[in-house]
Image 1 (cartoon, one colour):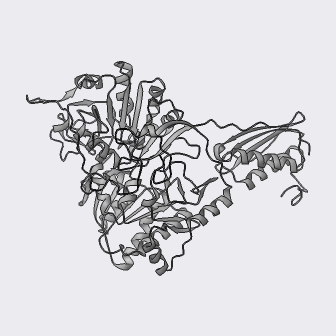
Image 2 (cartoon, rainbow over the protein chains, first blue to last red):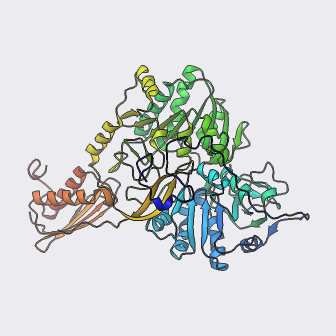
Image 3 (tube, rainbow over the protein chains, first blue to last red):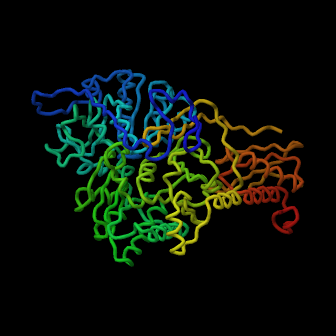
Length: 521
Length: 100
């Protein structure tokens, strides 16, 4: 069936009430029955939940073949825990048919590609998929199609019971002997632990893996002992250098700065740019640099930002410390400045992924966002964005909070250079739709600004402010005139990944790429 | 033009291409790698072959490692490698002639 973004979704996937994407807010007002976990009573007082090894924890939780294990990705590319746990489960205990349900996966998890090739890991549910894992899944080696969800779609699916987590593994920079966890105070700090919170509440069993055991009680806890079965102390949960970078620097690239300045001009031209406005930005070059120019407009108008959310990095913490933003609510930290600020700087708070972006709860933060500034690998003339598949059709990205913030915000601005190398960023059809065009409002490139025709109000704002803009079709033609018109990718029928919209409908599928050969002549 | 000896032009930087030409066996043997193969492989091949034809090269082993170069870059790298291979790159380069 063809969905609302024009993608053909195989009927075989539309079982058990699964629907294709129908447009934003389609599920509004529906009721859901939340799932509940089957958890073990620990009525008899315990002195400690610390067990001697990952294997002991797995055995205590009744680990067996066919289970779903969950992980969170706050340790980013520094994470050791996914690989440690899966190695014990598969190599030491001989478990098979396992599914990994992670908030995201990255290059740190290349060894899991081997378990996929061996058929030991048969399911992957994640936001991000990169590196060798992306390659083997794209090559059709995973037994079931990978399921890709946004950061808000994931807690929605967990709460609705579409993902049932048998054992959640919580990588914790610090934990006490009972399992109260925090993302700070240890040697591998990550700050916010927002993506782990829903897992801990909805998993049948929860195992905390830490490399820094601290005195009881470790408060305020991000994941609470009342949900934890066992605590394992390992030598290291991750490489601190890859968990949080040194301060994210604002780009000095003149192209990035020019685009960032135009982003700020667009924001300042809208009626929502007033005292107390809310804002989220990504950490890519031009997105982050928008902070700098926005601050100038705020000073000029004598206004302050009410609150900011998202993945947080140093420049936003700086604005908070200067009193230019009222509150920062944080689901993930990208650099040490942000890690060292959460729950330390007044008005810098932690939130769960559900509170951040879940479309099925009663009002996530993204729904109150005025502005979000995001990047894109590709954007097509229908304003559909791809942040998942590369130009060769291979999985190597992550929707993350992109679709959630785009849908919730009043103004969603995509900022991207028109071309990257020979790749046209603005194109006729994106490889994969990860954020539907009905959620995207403005595109800022180095060759001009385009406004989604669905937003005549914003077109009027830009005209009134004297900001020139063009059609997205003309930007696409400009791009193709520079790099040439790309050939269509060639696919096989086999679906290797299903891209779920945040509301649980099917937005797109990724098929197995057909190996490319140049014809001999 | 005749390829007299091996010659190379270009780099492996992003948006560039590295082109190596070697004396051939009476035909054009092209080996192509590209970071944008799926979307532009055919166009790159066509550009390389056209450029060789314009330079009147009919016997060459040519290796192109493309890192997302635009057509103008590809042409320039192929031309430069061919000129270097036959000692024509030092002076009297036929700008506006074979080079377009």
